[in-house]
Image (cartoon, rainbow, N blue to C red):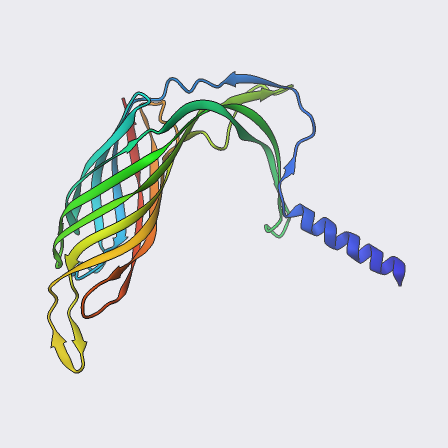
Length: 270
């Protein structure tokens, strides 16, 4: 019985270990590319935006076509501007002040192989981690939108907080390999943690059996915004983003509204 129990324990531990990536044994590698100076200073990003707006609106599936631009002015700041067309029409503007903007060593992950069990559930990842150069940016940021929502009238939003950006480009060639492999974290990425203030048209509601017609209301809350472009050192690459959060709407309804925006499209870099 003890032998059976030990065998079952060992099998269980082995099964658990298979659920996690496995780091490769010591492997000699050649650094092929770690040039982060060739990132383009300007990105123009046409993309679609599926979102949930706060307040009154009439569109069954709120969708925008957006064109955003972002420009990095050296190591001092970067500026953003754009237009929204669709369920929400208006203009956006913003920027980030670079309190920290430096090139530093960061761990880069290079996946060598993946194996999957017959059931398709267990995946083993064989990888290498190597410290290589990356550009790290952080500082205060602000973004503003001014425009209209279909069925909801005039709408403004101010978001302000902290922006954390990373730019990395790294590739290596393990000993015996013919072709180099790219780091998993290659590209430009931004994480913004922001407080949000909105002025919006209130939704109509029934309060104490009486119809209350929506007027103007304020909303206060917060959001996390993640966005990135895969290879911004090329002329064209993929771009995607996600905003999530919530706001508390003042007024007679006093409701809590979600903030959700899913974005995907292209980035043209110059």
